[in-house]
Amino acid sequence: MLTLYPDIKPNAHHTIAVDPPHEIYIEESGNPDGIPVLVVHGGPGGGCEDYHRRFFDAERFRIILMDQRGAGRSRPLAELEGNTTQALMDDMETVRRFLGVDQWLLFGGSWGSTLSLVYAQAYPERVSGLVLRGIFLCRPQDIEWFYQSGASRVFPDYWQDYLATIPENERGDLVSAYYRRLTSSNELEQIQAAKAWSVWEGRCATLHPNPRVVEHFGHPHVAIALARIECHYFMNQAFLEPDQILRDAGRLSEIPGVIVHGRYDMVCPLDNAIELSRAWPEAELRIIRDAGHSASEPAIVDALVRGVEEVVERIEEAGK
Image (cartoon, rainbow, N blue to C red; front, side, top):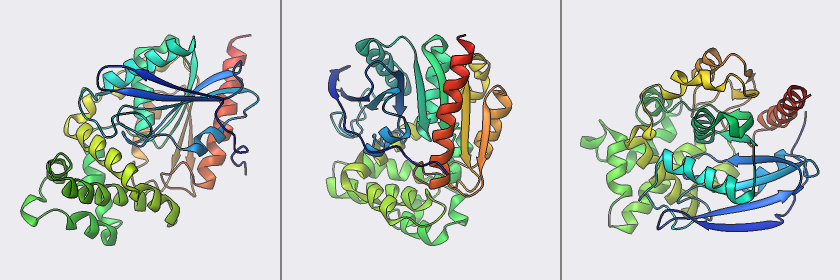
């Protein structure tokens, strides 16, 4: 089984001012002349983590990490103004031009798969390949599964902690109830709701309980950005048209792709990946039998590292 590459440090950091008040954080590591790859993090609002650099051979890849609006080291933290899917796509284009990249490989999981797909559909000529994990189509049923009714029946004990923040008379629409608290002027109410929302996700993200993942999701800096921005997007149907990703899947037909999805993914169930695979048959689907949702699970790591190599081979063969 393949594991992550050795830890590396960034060799460049950048901050780019985009639409006020947003400033986007970017870092580069690996080979400045290598194959450009952009890590598209999840959430929305999740931010990049240091281990994300380690999915790639530092001698062969120019590894680019970008914290999306309001997330990670981008500023202002948890900012909702001007935070839309189209704005994030525009930021990706701004970053690409700033770094002088003609084409890049997109490496995205969960919401990162969503954003990678819609960007690739809008700019297919800018995408050399796609390596995607934990597919999230952002359909109403996908949001309802995890935040209203579905995963609640698999994790009823964790669900009680998620519900506890919301009075019974507001539980018919939990996303709206959380949104009211996450946008409240009461900072204590905001952070209490954010931790409950984010820890629910962290607890359900792995096949086996992983305290490190739960601790990360429960960190106040992570929780407030993740919860506020996710809820903002879900209140607005992720700023996508109905079934947009599946409808426009034909635009991906010339892009080499690998789809990695844990069979026991309870955050984004496997039907998301199956539906995408049907609409985009040119991509290779890898269903990982011993995994849930998280990119840090060993079997997912193995599949992603292999997936990167497979997509690069296909890119190189097509270029011959």
